[in-house]
Image 1 (tube, helix red, strand yellow):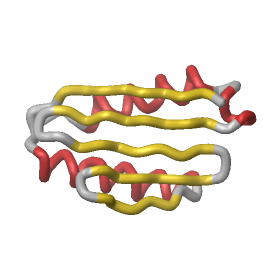
Image 2: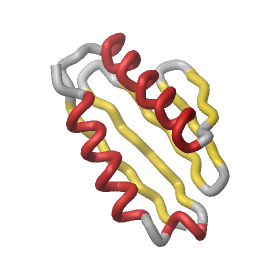
Image 3: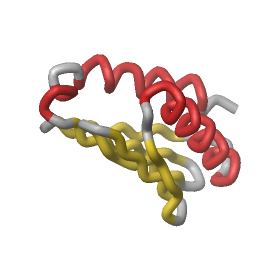
Length: 92
């Protein structure tokens, strides 16, 4: 089982960062059959073989992801895709 943790700073403020996280979750739900829900400022998501959270703070976002056995083999490409999505979506 692979674990991925990525943290990125932002200057969007908490509410705008929450909106960006929501948009990302909606896209993941459509493309990869991901289920998600908010728990405070943490968006928790789950699908077969993967689960994690996006914690939204005033000036940073932290993504934590646990991958099951089958997806663990693709952990570096999954991490790179998450980093690119965060870098693109957290710009003001």
